[in-house]
Picture (cartoon, each protein chain N blue to C red):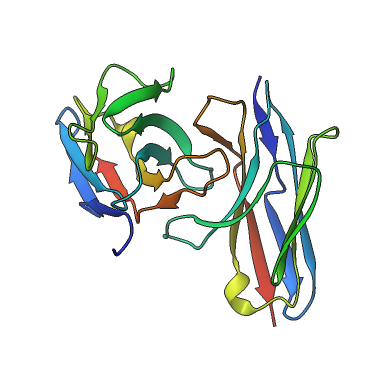
Length: 111
Length: 114
């Protein structure tokens, strides 16, 4: 079956670094996305990985290992506004346009 | 362009009634997706259009759900004979062609079936 696992909730301190992990088991793989979603709002795109390695974008980086079915999102210099849910989503094959979504990780930032 | 817009933002309906939601994607985006999201869960795929063609539909989608995109621009999602289990946030997203292109989401329509 198709499965994406993320921790339900994490807590971190303002100014610190946090890593949110995502593991997936899908019938195929054609890319992994990370989205941020503030409560009551729409998801907004953060990053996309299709090849192994690290993609860096400002304070946010995303890593992918296809052989391990594993990705992480790294957030540096945490700010209070980073308090949100972080969703991992996988496109499970070429020609499949739907994304399979994890339940999201709620990140709580404390002062 | 102000992004993906959805209407209405909120809908309360009685069980058994039909409801219709509208989505206006970003104008140059030919891909359009409908998702459903409940509290504490990720979005659940419902259906996908490329231009006016409906190319994918979730097996989880019952016959009570139908979606259209008649001219390849805006889309509607209709739910017939609503049930309490249909209560959720209905999200629309659009994107350009390409495997890695990001999808832009609308603010969603929150449906409450009473």
